Image 1 (cartoon, one colour):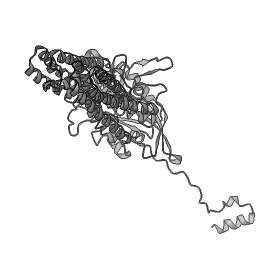
Image 2 (cartoon, rainbow over the protein chains, first blue to last red):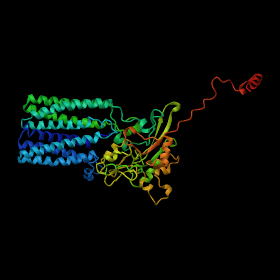
Image 3 (cartoon, each protein chain N blue to C red):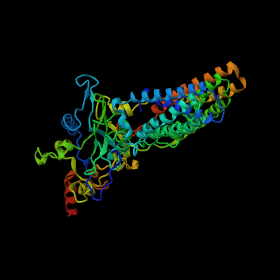
Image 4 (cartoon, rainbow over the protein chains, first blue to last red):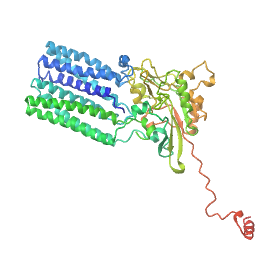
Length: 311
Length: 247
């Protein structure tokens, strides 16, 4: 599948934004992050800015962005529609959360924050399900895809929260959470790759053409000499050697290094510790961009069976 | 509504039956499809660089050619690929806007291009590559089963079939109601062992393909231990004896 920059930017940015919103809403009432209006306000604004930038980025993937409002109508059947509804609905408690932090209403902040956290989780769940529900793409139609979207959003969000909390010198809990989530992310991504590499293709050239009763099927003449939409969109391929390196970069740079830096920042503390937190967050987000790019580049679609004989 | 209509028992399932035995791979179906639909229900079907290298565009019908099997059993098979008007089309249910829909009355899968936002999720959801994006209009396009021909009372009745069917010079394409077990197409499918594509994905395509007939075994010739033919015996005496003894 073609890695579209707009969709990669969307899922990485909004994933991190929803993760940040989730942890802020959960940890603030427990007193585990700075309690001041400034910290809460800045963190909530950053979360909402990331979410909004991501959603705006996603509309540039549309052929008719001016009709995007129509996407809220088919939530009964479509995960994309559900994601849109959940994203917009989450703005209500998230906005209220921000207002009550700034205005200093702790009860309302706690309640609206919990609602916003639930909305964030539901939205990212829907994002994952958009991909996981597509049967023709075996790399997406996998039980670890949606948990991955949720976990990686939570990880990058917690890393960002640790950086912000570091300004107020109260980064211990978010940094520890982010370090644990980074380790879990590493484990999940490795398990996903092992499983998906061992999964047989969902269909074969023989079943796609129904000619398997004659014998092995090989494409002879293509239907057209030039490329087309299907091949550009669904036929994207990446050299195996590049994919292997990018997987290493994702695991090492996107999960292991940030997790270690976060763990190291805890005992170090001070401005050096904060620099380590900032570096961890930058690495985590950069790693997530690579991870999301690979998620598309390595995804294979059954339509290529008709063109190449393999997916 | 992108939720699927509840299928009525014995309801119409309009579709195509494509005979892979007689298809000669001439691309006439693809060409006439483009010709009709370029000004039909889904019009226009844009082309990019139509008169230079890199020419490409939106087509609803693509004719592949394959080799199947090896050696004497190997076959070259021409294979037209188009929308199969599935009974459980994920291209419809993933649509966030309601632009994609499956008609309750005849099962045809269509796109309302006035509502489509061009998210292209339906193209991802189709295992068969039936949907192609119109990059000029920013909306998705697909085979309409020539919905603007099959019910069109302004054209002669004989022409009220999809453009691909009407033009096929090898009579390899058949159109009809596959929901009716007594229809000509259903009988043809039953008789010839028609099959669906990628049944393992469970999209329940309506269109059926008829397999190439088995090639008859080539004439094996006389058995290896048979002697020479009478005319091949050079010696006239022996030839006479062979003739007498063979009576």
